[in-house]
Structures are given as structure tokens and as C-alpha cells.
Length: 216
Image (cartoon, rainbow, N blue to C red):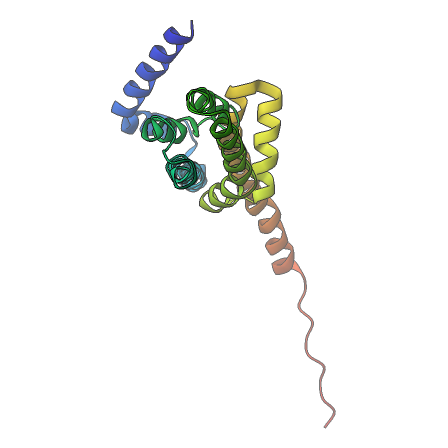
């Protein structure tokens, strides 16, 4: 079932990427003409926010892989040899970092098992290093890098990740930050559209006091 879902998802993504211009034109045609500028503004803000999430996640993945390689190769200074297949494990950690929280488990399990074949102490180091990377990723890299790229507060990113993982597991952790970015975009748009416009209208409609006449 999972394999079929992945294939169908990839097919839909391929068709959408091919006809993205026609899809955009169709969606634009559904919007009344007098809301055209609002539609363009919202789409641009959504694109900026979601693109920032993707860019930030890619940077986090690369940093995660670099830290993994640093530890798995650097342990050779003390132990005498690196962790077996350190390069492959680092690439796996980079890719699996796309999955918040659960990616660490998926990429860390084979690393620990391989380290056990070398030394129990090396396996303990691998576990400690993976937990250290996870701590840095969850508390520093993801909130700050993704938050900055998507123009979201780091606290919002952390809350979105925790809530998504708690409610829907892996799928929730994957989609939580993009969904939070979409919600933030619509909220800010509506705030500017209605609240700020109402405030400016009231300010323009308020009577202007004439300056006092100085006695001569």
C-alpha cells in the first residue's frame, strides 16, 4: 500500500509540474476579477514561505550529514579507525534528515549496529554523537535556519514540529512546518487586508483638528 501511494504521489507531482502554467491559469480564472491583485499577492507570499521551508530543510540536511561525517570519521583519531561505511552512513543521515525526529532513528540504527561489530565503546560513542546531533538539529538548526528561511518565529517551528509529530506521526512531522507556513501567510494577509485597511480608513475619516489661532 505504501509503495502504491508513493508511485501515485510521484505521478501526480509529475503531471502537476508539466502543466503548472495551465493549473495556475485555471486557479486564477476561479478568482473574481476585482480580487485579482489579492490572489497574486497571496500566491507570491505562499511561494516565498514554502520555498523558504524547502531551502531551510535542505540546509539542515546537509549540516546534519556533515556533522555525522565529522563524528564517524573523526573518531578514528581516538579509536584508530572510523566507523564502518562512515561515508554511506553520512549520506543516509543527510537524506533521512528530511524526516524530522524519525529520520534520526532510521539512519542511526544501522550506524549503531555496525559500530557494535567493531567495539561496544564505539557503539556508545555513535549513540551519544547521534543524540548530540539530534539535540543540535531540534533546538538550534531547524528552528533558526528553517524559521529564518520561511520568515517564521523559531518557537512556531518547534511547536509545529512537536504538534505534527504528536498528532500524525511521521506524516505530521513532515507536513507540520509547511502547513504552519501556509496558515501564517493567510493570517498575515488577512491582517493586512482587513485590520490595517480599517485602521487607515478610520484615520482618514477622522476630523482633523485645526491648529489653534495665535492671538495677535
